[in-house]
Image 1: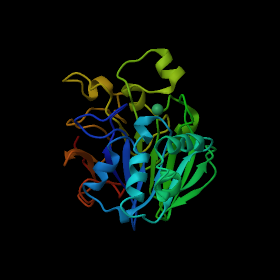
Image 2: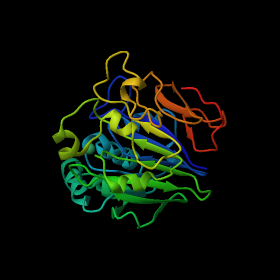
Image 3: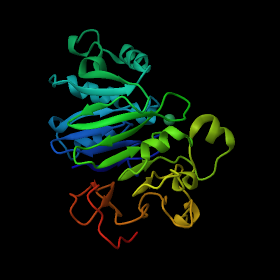
Image 4: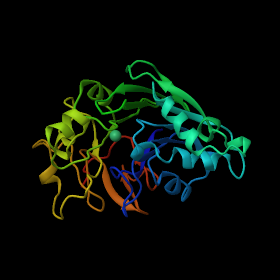
Length: 296
Ligand SMILES: [Zn+2]
């Protein structure tokens, strides 16, 4: 089993719609957090126990994907010290965590001298598309996205073969397309409706249209994050669709986004939910076999 729950997907910072980037993978036995954008801890704790968390994977160290790491670490070390869980970071980025710890570590509390380092077992992810990591029984690999800092697209593969891929922040590039190739679900982040060359290819981002038409080799489903700022009312798939076939579509909170085939998207309890066949639990995206006749 491998299911996705979108806790938050707001670019740059939380909004009234929810946290910045943070996603939960539901495995057979627990939960894996992908990205720890601000608001992620609160969203998580409102519905799950800390003892259900099996690991955290951070795609890159921009604040909207990682700022809550310190909040998680504080919670992990106070009022009681919880068992360490794995934390995966792009290779070469551990120094940012060390700097974070240096700023917010508490010298007079031995368990919080270096909160993140003390809370989590840190593993560096080579973004080579080959090295296989494992978290809670799910294998995953990291691919080099095109972004202003080392950014890792991710591909998770459950023992039953179901796959979920994440683009991370990225511009178009071959490694991310490879990460998403024939995945059951591709979570593709788009920051803009319109943007100039520097934002897209210099900084490394996508517009909704670019995300919707990507990757070039079809996946079974594509989901694109809401853009920020929110597009004007009435901006719907017709404005963001990348292909006439509508293989990928984008939207904003409270409007249907996505998808082809069977999945439906709805907002429930302030999180995006995508349900397949009615078999997925609430607030989850199932990668179970899609049912025919989905309606957006
Ligand atoms: Zn970024």
